[in-house]
Image 1 (cartoon, rainbow, N blue to C red):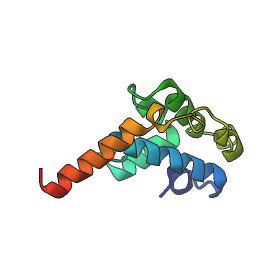
Image 2 (cartoon, rainbow, N blue to C red):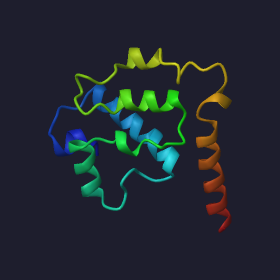
Image 3 (cartoon, rainbow, N blue to C red):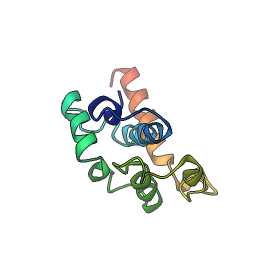
Length: 117
């Protein structure tokens, strides 16, 4: 459940989907949901304090900027899908300059888990 929708009772729409997409990207970085120690606390923190503070330091500057634009607490201030599709993080000439390391980490973790390691 999206924190904005579940905690703040805002209507669900494209801005909520953009927030959710950013949370999915964070889950790829962390290999678990942000603040996953408590689901209810995680939703409350996301809705009231936001998630910008959990954006990984190891993320590229483009990735951080992209995530910050997606994670604006106020949906009216959040980037639109049209704006995000023009962002340099999305329009890199090579995936090796972007999310490659994140995906590698996800696949390696999943492979190790499936192997019982």
